[in-house]
Image (cartoon, rainbow, N blue to C red; front, side, top):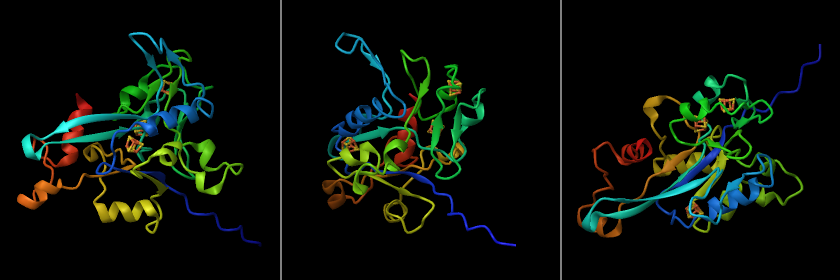
Amino acid sequence: MTSLPAQPPPKRLGLAIDLDTCVGCQACVVSCKEWNTGGYPAPLSDLNPYGPEQTGAWLNRVHGYEVGEGDAGRTVHFPRSCLHCENAACVTVCPTGASYKRDEDGIVLVDEEMCIGCGLCAWACPYGAREMDPLGGVMKKCTLCIDRIYNETIPKAERQPACVNACPAKARHFGDFADPNSNVSKLTVERGGMDLMPELDYRPTNKYLPPRPARKEAASTAKPLQPAGGGGFLAWLDQALSD
Ligand code: SF4
Ligand code: SF4
Ligand code: SF4
């Protein structure tokens, strides 16, 4: 009997996002919109784009927050998109099977042909990562630029999500978290990369690298950034997401 060729081990693709070096420039937001409005989840429609109440679908948003007071105060920019969770409740609750997670690389996607626009997945996602397209009436979300990362018609160095390509601060890193020697796995270990809301056990693939202490702060008290609540940096982010 001939044995079947060994299958490559499944990947766990995702992003490591550096909250220390993100400057909130929004280049990743615009680049994401530009690529995806002509790609796999296209179009990402907009309503009243030049009017007083613009709305539309964006798969990546960056929020800015003031944290701390006085000398200890600083601005933190928080990029928000789908985290491609291992235990993705958006998939579990979807009544039509439109939401699914790929076995081979862990990317969570929406099959728009099957989506009925019920919005249950948006309720289930605690990270606000789903976007109802206002004109299409279907749910959209970050695809990790699946039509780019496997696209052999573009140069190899550019086969990464559009947001990663665009970031001038190199705050966004793309790679395979299943491989302990990948760039993102190593960065996560070196920088203490964190899960958002780990208590929910959604097991997000994406990791956030926390801000380092400000130079002034490090020189005087060497105290790391501690947001209100005393639960560590990401407890503050959890609070911001819940507001
Ligand atoms: S971040 Fe939200 S939309 Fe993305 S996989 Fe997790 S639960 Fe689903
Ligand atoms: S909006 Fe679409 S993807 Fe989300 S739960 Fe409903 S059918 Fe599934
Ligand atoms: S492009 Fe980079 S620095 Fe600019 S907002 Fe996005 S993650 Fe932050």
